[in-house]
Image (cartoon, rainbow, N blue to C red):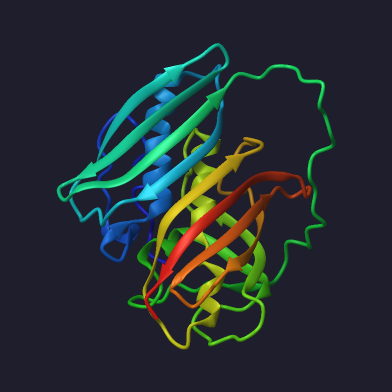
Amino acid sequence: MSNPTPSFGTLTDPSGPLVVPADWMQGRTAFGGLQAAAALRALQAQVGDDRPVRSVSVGFVGPSGHEPLHMEPKLLRAGGTVTQARVDVVGSEGIAATVYGAFGKDRPSSVARPPTRFDVPEEVGGLQLPYLPGITPEFTQHFDIRWTQGQPPFGGFEGELAHEGWCRHRTDPGPSSAAALLGLLDAWPAPALQGLRGPAPASSVTWSAQLVKRPPVTTDDSFFFRARTLSAPGSAYVTMRGELYDRGGELVAHLEQLVTLYG
């Protein structure tokens, strides 16, 4: 792997535009998790720390190109406990993505249940996602992704399109744990790619992430991801769901995503 510079945390800093190096690209556009994280941090800078982010929804409007991306945040409403806001991620070709965030104060509720848990396997072995120039997206070199179940992409697999495994940032993820988690959620290839009979493009259309916890995230912190394809009707539009757990098996975040396949 080449030396990653700048890091995920540096790139998503809200003090300036998002200038995306070639090694953080995904085809013609910047890695979607990077765009979402930068947009979220721009919103966090406006909303403040007393209202943690609860939900993030992203629409990928078009390719970002290689020019700097500017965050254009807009506060939609600040209620007594919930703030809703939006960011347009704008590049030289117009809006690349629109990101919506819901932020809410902690307050007591009469409904309280134990956290959702999963019996995660040991963090050893697994099939590592290799970085293959010209085949795997450039940004993948900045994440450590290891399957414990499921198949790698492009093998024409005819069974259930699902996978599980461990993941972590290889570069400094920055001070926002929520933004760092968005990067991990979007770093995995969609499980539907297992069914393709050879390399072919795919792109996210929309995804929505619910953030249950916001634990510290560093390059030493691994998380367990499990994903399954919910719908693959043969029309190239595939729906998937993913869940992210900490090392103790407690649910941290979950994601639903619409992916379009070009093969």
